[in-house]
Length: 85
Image 1: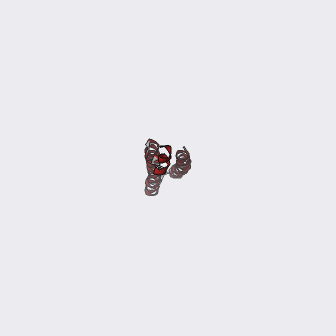
Image 2: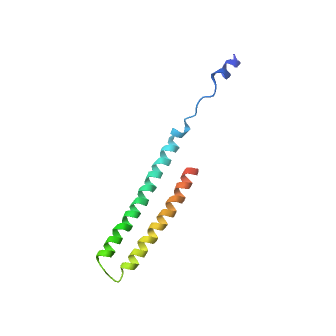
Image 3: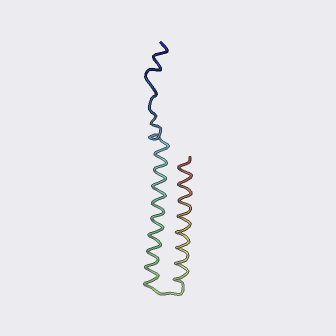
């Protein structure tokens, strides 16, 4: 009766719907949300710096731009690590 086992064919794998996929999707959404938050923070500070002129406006804009760049680079590296795991 062992020959009947081979007749059914391969069973489809649905491993992408497992708990790993759910966690990867959750972390992906969180990272995209954080990057969006950083971008909106940059826009808010830019509007504030253009509205109120102070001697420190340039430093604040520079700091928020650096924050956005670091969060973009870190977010993309984290996404790559999550997808490879």
